[in-house]
Length: 215
Image 1: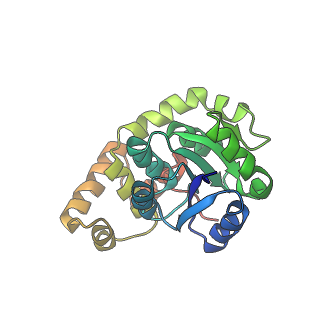
Image 2 (image 1 turned 90 degrees about the vertical axis):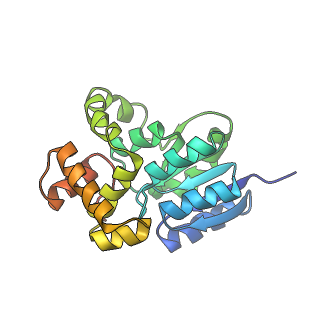
């Protein structure tokens, strides 16, 4: 029987190796990457049935990577694995097309089950979440998501890179666009979000799940 093809993405090599060892006895692990931009490229090239991905990844976070992947590979199942139990990350993972959200603390026991549920068309959340996590953001989420929806995918990526502490030249090199374009986007972001400093942009990015808190 042909094994299900799985692609892995996490910015910590030790975590990637651990997930690979856990899954490779049951699945064909076709690749492992450490940032969201490489994840999108690998997904489009390898076309796996399942992707296990972290949320907090450099260059392009897991949420925005998932959005891009789902546009081209709508049948691919996305299983998020994260250290963050904050409800906003769970909600955004679901909005991005995720079928499961597993906390890293319970991954060894839960990941295989989460993948099985996702492949059957269901949804899986680590025990302890229930639906209270999503329900608790039902009203607040409508307000917060409105701000994020106003940003384009490029603006969200630049916001993430700014929040990661990268300078205009670094961002321009990573995205292969001009420094002037980055300066334009930075100014536009501040106008849209009503902020005036990089610190405020960073706080916004963390608050609305564009970038994960440090730690």
